[in-house]
Length: 99
Image 1 (cartoon, helix red, strand yellow):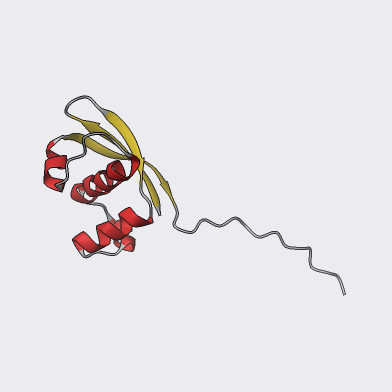
Image 2 (cartoon, one colour):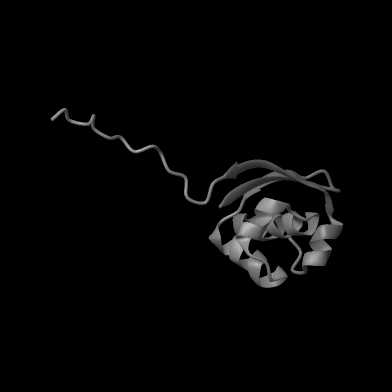
């Protein structure tokens, strides 16, 4: 599952981060939820946490070590893109043979 988030901070800094397996697992561990639970609705705290993990991993400058300190710096976090966990294309099949 990949979710792309647009982040805006109170200092005017804006950036996008994309989740990866590490950030999803970190979310599951911290909040004791399954990634599949996100399909029924996402809490803002979950989005902020995914942005926090993504910002740390992508080298966004000045990411606080403490999650709550990161939240204090945010104006908004919005989902701007989403990829399925296991996207598949339709399989090409041959025409049935006439017997």
